[in-house]
Image 1 (cartoon, protein in one colour):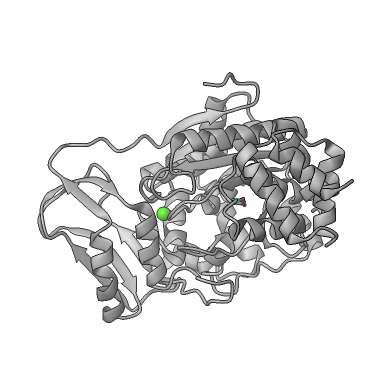
Image 2: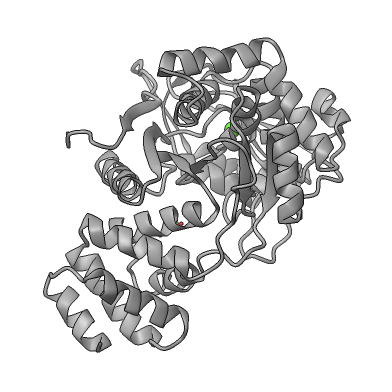
Length: 440
Ligand code: URA
Ligand code: CA
């Protein structure tokens, strides 16, 4: 096979065969195909697209390029969840204990974050002593014993995706639905998921700003799952404002604990019940969405979801006292309220820019090597639709110094738009995308 022929074929809008896709991806992973040819192919895909069969083949070839996590020693159906990324998105910290308490085994591989705040691993490391460097055997054993474990990624999963993603990043080929869909799905499948629940965000703080694109991405991923025999559903959810109120590592841990106590922000709670309901249903632990959500609500009410979280922190060596005494989590020396200079109604928030405020305070990393500050971030006091009087606190900046908070204040104020008209907050859950659905 000649690589140039395959590039030409895609350039002219034809579909590549399974063998051709294997040849390209394995050839690239093993350095037989150079970056310049792969870039040309990626651009051809960006412009011509790929059909579902090609996208599923690409996904499987990326899975085969590296190790796969074997979770077969864990009893039950392993359902993984993935979010396309939002601001202040604390769902994983809540969902793990929540669905584990309902009897679904949760074996979560998580990454460190690059962006506004850390990833799930970073957030959990807000607990002093929390160890995410488990062996695979220890990981599996903990899930069988406690129903829940969270481990940092060690195995060399989907190296072809890593290489291709880095290439796409510098060749203007990231924003291709089949390339994004296969990239995300390959990582979930390599991590051992039997079934997958996707949270596809849309809005100002999302990767997919337009709802139409979010729907296309969701549909593409659900179709990949269907083709390769891993049941997949996607929830399209709003990211026009941060989820909950807290944006920052330990700040989000506190918010997650409140949510597990049944006292969390309404939007975060609703999203967790929706995603969790899908996970419980896919795991075969409930016959309907209503039954699944009722089961989950019961674990919030009777304290069993919070108890699972305690067990998780304890099993992985974290300071479990901080679950009941959150003041033991890292706290910033300065809490700086930002007051509204005018009155009005919050008509919009720039979620992404709020994330960047948290990052400027030190909550996120700019490069893989940068340190992270667990204590800092932004805690909103007002969200879309709220009435604001002049002088009201819009948010509290948790900072290392007054000077750092003052430096972020103006930037924060520019993320909030106040108007005169009443507005209803954007609906949180936009759509559920499942296999076999008609295109809407
Ligand atoms: N996230 C991914 O994991 N892959 C993409 O291609 C885009 C976003
Ligand atoms: Ca939050």
